[in-house]
Length: 304
Image (tube, rainbow, N blue to C red; front, side, top):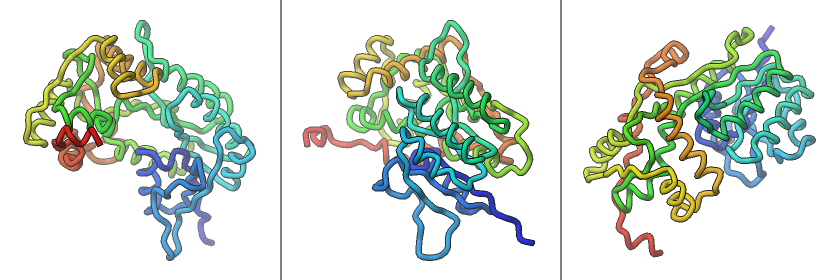
């Protein structure tokens, strides 16, 4: 008798981590059902004319009916939505839909637990979701990365045009992990046949790096001088809201993360080698692969 393939529902399938989860599930013995927030969204992993284990549905994260439809017949769910003030309500909606549809396991991409006196509002959002998840699901796990290497793409503009990195990190270090390695951990837990034993896992990359060290690494791969300018938290917040046009909550989050790394040093070594059965990618690999994102561009391009 043939084994019935599990159906894995992937929320956040168009994001950096979710897209990689879909790509890795494509080569696995399962059916991967990506959930798009709009029917018009591009598929993160293309579905060709040949039979494939990749499928898609679309659902409004505020529609409990559509979410329940997206979960019908599924066994496992990857929980990831865009970070926003609506995240708590939307992820609770998904948990409810999963429970009503008979889904047995949820793997959630979460955030590190923040100790007092540091404060990170986004971590508080995740904490509320996790509390609800633990009350409504017996088999679950929350993955806690510190910071993604891919987050450096947010700084691409100032690096490309001005050769500058701005931050309020001082000489503190941040631990970075490649999103693809996070996805590998997630996929392993989504496909596990036994009930998950760990409810919370800190995912750390192989190095903790200062912004000064990042400036040196970026100087090397772009073949030009990249400088780090350390500014006050208030100056950073102002720059993010006025020049980068970020919403206030996101600017606050970025400032809070620098403050957190200053007050509580982040891991210096990785925690995932045993989880992915190989050493994780290092920052230099990521930067070499994506160096085109940080290459110099002429200032006049900003005018058009």
